[in-house]
Length: 101
Image (cartoon, rainbow, N blue to C red):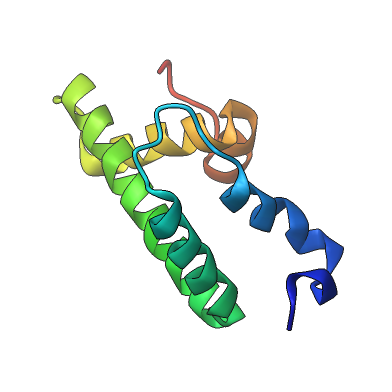
């Protein structure tokens, strides 16, 4: 399947691989290989890759929160992360309002 025959909803994702970025140390050859790899991935493979990246981002976020709030337990840190990602209103709806925090 050529790029021209791909659905239009994929174009922004594919185009982002073409755009040069400031302070980018990735060679054009490496970027082309990465783009070809992404285009060859099945939807299931792409979903797995995004899940892995999301888990890694969550781990980094939790590590940062743990460094800022060393006295808090893991459940408290997870709740803080949820508040950062979803906002207070959504977290309060799901888990109940804060207790003075």
